[in-house]
Length: 592
Image (cartoon, rainbow, N blue to C red; front, side, top):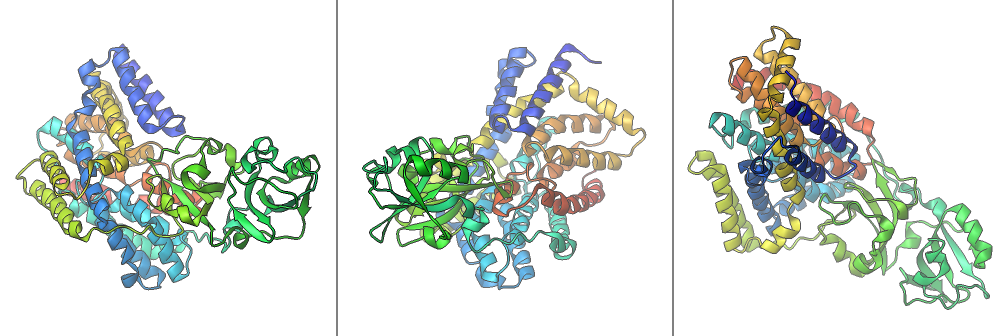
């Protein structure tokens, strides 16, 4: 029966769904909005609304992320990636298989998003080493990380949350390796799919050797000569009408046969200077007479013209926790902060058509920069970028690699043997990492995926509200009536599909939290253990191959691989069907 509280919950779910899909605001902001709406509506008490911050699942995820960062800070994952060439060789198939196995193993114990972020430059180097396009390897990188994350309880935050929900209802938490058999089955299914049909349909988006051509910049780059009576003479570059009023990018100045790269505010324009600029054709025609500039014709500007001993072109992917997300490119002082100029931007696999200065930066965007070589360390050491052109040289702390590895492995083994609950073992491991000097709190504050923490803390109360108001019972009853006399195995199969489709468009953690109470209600109405139903939700939420939107690892490779949305549907669609069939067969047999 529909009640006012149920209607309020349905309205809040609808608002959350729209915001998650459209991304008008960040997912973590949406989660916090949901929490506040539940509090204001009176559906939940203040204690219930704020319970996500103290929820065991949230704290466990936080502790495991710290353990993961402990391994990253000492360079364990980077060491693995940087030595991968020794075993992959130059054969595409061999690279795909070795890469998938290594990534899946790492993702079972370290945040799979972090693994993909760290290995993105490695994969680009492997592609060049084997003379194949990066798009042939980046999709296997993401998909292997996703399937690898299902092998253990600590592989993804979704696993932790579902385990916590199961413990709240049954008093029994999932074991660390409780899903290892099913996770390995799905990973082997992925490998078979990759070797046979998958490898044949993974797109081959070959990049141009010239980045200027890759980003379709040739039509925008030109040289102009400053006339003897130009009003620009004597003006600093960044204060000139050329930059201030006409928004033209001045990349370098050729003066007396000498290049002045990335000229800044102190460089004043002189007569007969040759300016290398980026401008639209219509703008160029407008400023030619006004500013007395003469276009240098028959000059083809390419990567060589923008590269020297002082400057270089680099591509960088915007990270999930970058302070740049949501900022307009023109509002960032790139020259001062990074010693660079943004030239072009690729989003969703293609260069953006709007003026790059007007673009609002998003997670996963790939930006082409002309940067000072002396400032490259600012990019490589920044948590805001993943530089594709060169692998960041990590300061491998060999004396701490073994220590951090032993602490993390010990924490996992203690939790796996049941000597301590997972949350306790993880928190003890965090303290040991700090005390041993393997990781510092400053590093944690800078690298922590705080969005995940606030997303979970904000969205968990919605699961409480769905259950408390009876919304889960209402949905479960309607669902079961629609399915008639279906067996538990059939319900599990359908539940997997529904969760998979939802996860293709909204956060996997949010999907799991929304669907879990309904899954539990259906299990209770069918008089079976909820474990199998929750496992179906958990695995479906963690294997969103169908679109680039449902999982962070897909977003990281989206622009870097120059993929189209349809590429994920084509390659990920077949894999999703295979995973669904395997899960539908094995989950009832392993967990019912």
